Length: 304
Image (cartoon, rainbow, N blue to C red):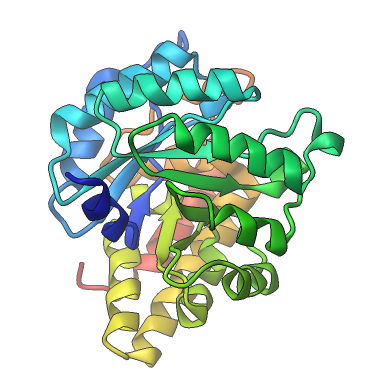
């Protein structure tokens, strides 16, 4: 795909894919493939590997690259492969991003550097993204998730980032609708903003977001797609109903249990979640029963 085609694809629904591990903490490549094969060709815009739901902080660089290779074997245009390549230093981010492109990544999700967060002011972030975007051949997506990084990027700074050549989009996983709306007022026209907040998916679309990258799409892809399609066709009542079901899953699974909850939901939905990587621990039997109950409630009465 050309760069312009990839940028045009930065809309709709993307799953933030899990990375299944076995008991020993090794990647279960077979489960990863099986999950992806079930999700391709159903209307999703693409797939994110090595994001937060994919336990990126626990992945070696070689493992991130292997996941890109595995995804590229299965994913075909117009679906795209996004790869999480953001590391703490600019040099390391450029190196990993180039390697990801060489292995087939269509777009690069670059997390805001955050260890020295007190020094990550607007000028530092602009310089970082300018350097990365200028040295890779595929579009760069800014990734902001302040609840994990502790770095709260101002909307005006994101506006500046949106002006950088080859910085093509933002994934905002703050879940803060007021912040997202302020960002949409600051970025350049037609700059795609993707939400990572399941609780505000419909609100975000109404405000002008281009779509969403969600962990829950791993196990309820039809629900996420149906919400998006209902919005596109102006079926507000239907979209709000789907939003309520998605919010139920967020409150019952991802908010209390995080990645282990997502993986349990995959196991209970006909996919392969596998084990989380230590120090994350799998859910116990009581929590898995609560996840199963939430899944039944969210799916009640649906035809898909």
